Length: 198
Image 1 (cartoon, one colour):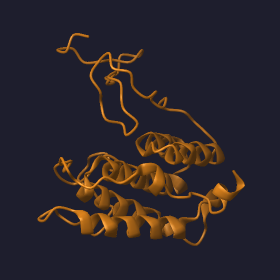
Image 2 (cartoon, rainbow, N blue to C red):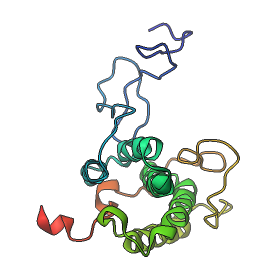
Image 3 (spheres, rainbow, N blue to C red):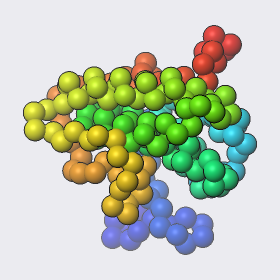
Image 4 (cartoon, rainbow, N blue to C red):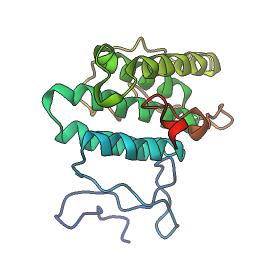
């Protein structure tokens, strides 16, 4: 690959073709990586939740975020905040697993604030109340582990125009020796009781 040219997809749009690891980090060209989720897939809400849960359970929250992002972009307007918030929480778990405790806590809080409006309806069987509690509890643990001086976010879902699912609101804080969260062990249950049924 000529490093001076941008990677493009079949339609000519810029798309990074570098392989990725299980947490979505780019790897050097030629390195075996994890297969990426196809973009722009329109799934039923049930299929979205099922595929995202499979990826979360496999310790691949970055890839689950891509599934939620497809639903966010293709779903009905009334549900966009639900899918966007779930994507943000998945990216928060991704950052936490990469050792970026401040960014992880920030996105977990933002995502939980966005989906909180769905608490009374549990759309598509998603246990919103349990997810909000999970995200806030994990964010609190990440705050306790964050390096001194790291900014703490209150969970305000507004942003500065960048893609909210990818925005950490500041510089990345992936530091050597930072506490790392096991993404598979910390994976939330999107629907309560699903694990028992598997």
